[in-house]
Image (cartoon, rainbow over all chains, first blue to last red; front, side):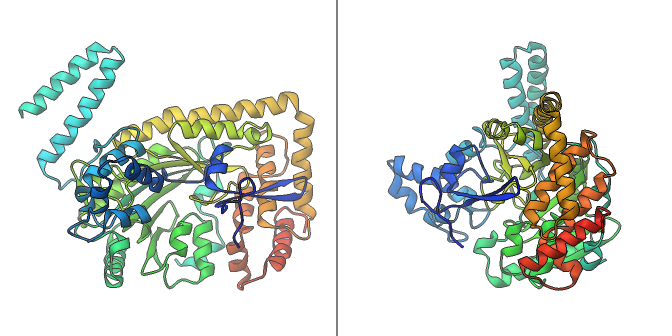
Length: 162
Length: 351
């Protein structure tokens, strides 16, 4: 059954049931009215919305809409529609568009600093460790922890030289 | 072990409250992984989807995941069996309702469940009672290392583990806790709390994850940021900052109720017990709502003769899938209401 949002009559996607004194009260809201009430059920940052904004803002909007992955054949427009990518290569094929999107979805970050597969090459491992150390260095400097910053700098130098 | 054995029994982690179990019902850590050299699922042919399912099915059964592992072919399972898996948090609603070859490997104590072909090729979770994020994380790390020995995962040095949705990329690690927040709800502070959580880049969802409502005052809180931080940083922040904050808010709200509205609180708990003990028709929502009061009563020492185990068992047994699976047949909602009410009366010792 489809419900309309009780506030703005758009299609409701958030459904709540409350029972007060044995009375079942059902509420149906659209995403934006639910968000306005502080109710969130959405797992993801609204990707479609971010992409839409980017297309509108970007002077190169037409260039974006012609982007296509050479491996799986998904176009940027199809990605925008579905919110999911077609294959691992899309991260490279759409890099230009994805980086700002990732930054918005991940508090400004667009580089992985976490674990890497055990079978990944040593270079990749070092690359990651360096990224992580540089991040920590930035935090240490911001927190005026100069002793730690000096330690981190030494470790970075050591890794860079190896 | 099969699904029928599972339905009638409560996994060990649900039997006793884990650390801080008066507020934190469970902790969960999950990883998403995709096979290198394969498209993500939305671009796979039907044949490729089958190929992935078969390969991962084989690998998962061969991997030493735990004492005993069962693999459920979700595509071939009945709607009722899928519902039971969702209610036990072993698969997501999304996977239950998807199409194409897919499955889930479940370790017998239900602490480990690995979904095959959900949004990503592989979604592994470790679930434990109470606040046990470190233990969950240690388990998932071991699991990942084990799988990694046999399976090449899509990875880039810049973006990390590659996932179908860019919101999961990087560590592809989602850390979450299921928290019971009845006092924040009762004192009208829940929305403020949820808004604060959102400002901290957290997602708050209902009992069964994405797109589900918060019934029984149960909320699932999880990290949204998976990129630009190491796995350890994500777990640490969640464990040391976020969860203690939520616990502290709820504890204060509980104390506030005890100090200022004790009689109203006791009234609620005892009314809930009376209703559950004598209702002849009851929906799962109402049951969850009343069990929530009993749970609060139990932890505040306002309810006698109840145990954590009984409440957890009731909560699960009252769900539509479990109710029908136990009865051995499908039932219309009205009949379910009657059977559910009877079951609850029996379990609460009123007959």
